[in-house]
Image (cartoon, rainbow, N blue to C red; front, side, top):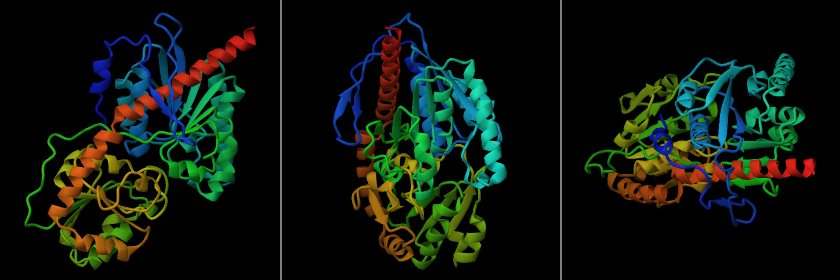
Length: 420
């Protein structure tokens, strides 16, 4: 899966002296507020540090590409990205460099569920101290924590004199998460949530610092075409092979529905954390395994989405957003998703897709058994319209840029007040 970087290259020659009026949606009231002007050309460039928790190319990583692309394209910002050194070198770093960001790999205090034992906590404390030392001489004007797993960096940055910190909440929080993460989030001066579901799960929905900015993805469609009728539908599922992504739920429903077509499975085990054996699940559950093709990891899922009639997102737990939903919409393909939070804010039931309760095998079975190519094609046309109206990357990037500009403007005002 990839993000189109041509947008940023095309913008390099465009003047960036003053931003056009940009709207910022307030998560609590729904009121749009105008963005403040950027710094003028020739003034000191603000130094922005973005901290991320992985070096892959899944949902949160692709959103980081969009955020960095927006910020690095601005003449008034100097952008550095820190990636963690405890994961394998992956495809994200080179893509960030292409966008014009400075990329550094360093020990970071990343909250990983598999590393919260006594030894893991000692490692977190050590990495937090190292991060403080790295921050002490860099004089960043703003630190951007790209996921909730990075939020330990927020109080560390504030303690080292960084006035403005943005936290980007891309994952739903459990009750246990809230106890640990809310004190860290208090160190942020602004919070961005990818969905109202994620913001509600954090318990910060009434916080004046928080805004909801829905994700957006690049339009990767070559030509949105209807599929030939008179054949069985083809579906695709694309996600990490985590236990909570619902592969067992999907395969059980697929078998119960009589294996109604062809199912293509993309993805692979996560770099960090537990995983499920998807090929093993297919062999154990599906009575007609020839109807399921396990492809595994791919660099770009777009061709597979174009070849499918619909995308399935069967997550068993809360889903922060489900970026593949937007990728399907951009290709004119509807989505069948569990009622898992984020997808409920995107999928219009019976119009751009269909929803079923989490872990509800019978509900998903009923949907799969009732689908045909014609029905899916009609919903796909509606999905394409919804993408163009609500989920383009330009819409998301403008709102993220507005948040960063307002934070930096506030920092300038704070500096003037201290100086006076």
